[in-house]
Image (cartoon, rainbow, N blue to C red; front, side, top):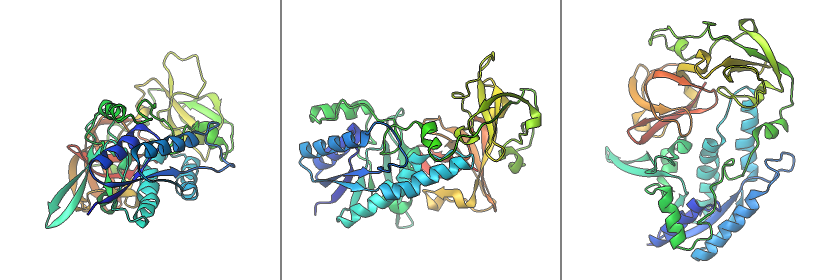
Length: 391
């Protein structure tokens, strides 16, 4: 019997080729465009890219001869993504909306809508792969890196569950981006030469400071430079002292001098260089810490400033997630993995230590810009095993 799959058609070349390949493979394909934003009280962009994207998705569906519909998920998107983003920035943390969008929208609300249409699967144009292994007579699904090393998007799917993976298809995960473009050209798809979007998941271009200022009021505060030789930074602890190795540095106004003014600590993130507008330094200033309660930003001069680096990070129990539930560590366990703390970062060797309060990740070498609110994801070879929100 022919299997039915709903493709999240975004209006881009990747999802277009996804739908094309599935049709070629004999699936009954339905194209569905997710409309995620139309809240006039908060403007995401002066442009309106979703209208163009929706039209492009519809044209591709017509070219492929598949049914097409748009689904309005803006209510869920606002509640689950946008409100969460504002709340996290208010707390001085930096969320990752793309990871959340996949967990909360594409593979939850959208998946439910697809299943109600009688679909067996949902498919997206992500550059990642799905594997299956048999463990004790039970099928276990694997989330594997995409074949294109420059486009691997497994990180963005790091919060998926076994149930979500069981219903997911990633047809272009075996391909290079250049091959996807070639397929689109040979199939005469209208999106073959369309540029990749750089915006917020399924929404479009976002200018973050302007976006945040619509909900988080600008508030003048001090920019403090912490000198390089201020040895409050934690470098000399033993690997056994997990708490000290992974906690944020204790920063206070007494450690440095005021070098400028900012418009709100919640607009800045650790490792940020642009937007400080403070000149006259031999080396550029980087944000090494923020305090949204006191409305203070701490900076350090130079890319080698010790305040930019941490040896480890902590993930509380509530924020720990295992794609491979069968590999979950028990309290007292430790295991070597490779991990990344942001998209496109090369994987770094590390050791996971499971304690009663949560999970500690200790890297073999200090990591730059460990940022609370972001996701850490750990891998075994090319399989993403688990992830969690950095505390």
